[in-house]
Length: 232
Image 1: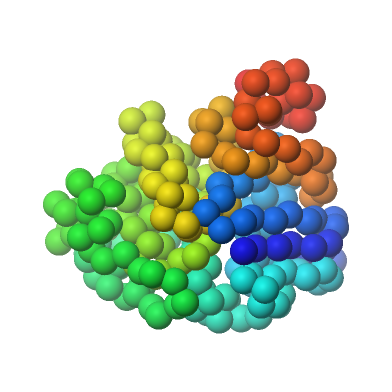
Image 2: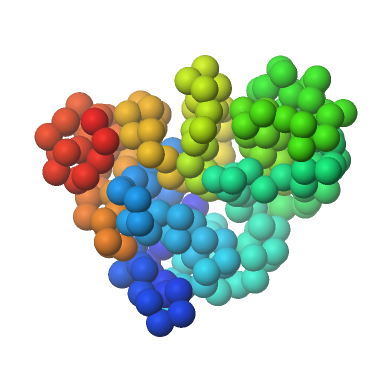
């Protein structure tokens, strides 16, 4: 579904990604791990066209989206759950979801479907987002991605700042998306939790891919995680 081939990305004249290549298949959970500053978020931004790749190629559903405008990439079916939520704080949760709806080649979720995933969301719909906790905002942020009818969802640090129970709910949601055929690319510092659900994993270090393998193998190999600079 998603293929990144030899991508170099820069901030100004500073190169951040060096020949990054990875793939995500339909209905697959892929983890993108690495220490802080490794280039994980920049990889997501390159996919979204927010920090366009200078060289290399990115395709989604066999369509070249390299350096395409971000709104075109979103309409192709790429959803995003950013690390800082980025909801409209003065709008209600319901309004945040309503303005995120769009037509793509994929099936969208309605409010009821999102509330089935997050039962607490139903009570949040009439509330302004500025009055919500981090966990509540994450429910809104993920639901906003789902109502946008994605075939692929990019998760940037979805467990950041959340209580353990909420983290479990978020990871169950990722697994549920996999079961419906939605592909997920997950960046997170909560390594063991992500490896519990990931089909495959790529590890970045210094903007380069230094490891590719299955989530299960890396989960069981503490020495490999240590050598790769990943938290135990």
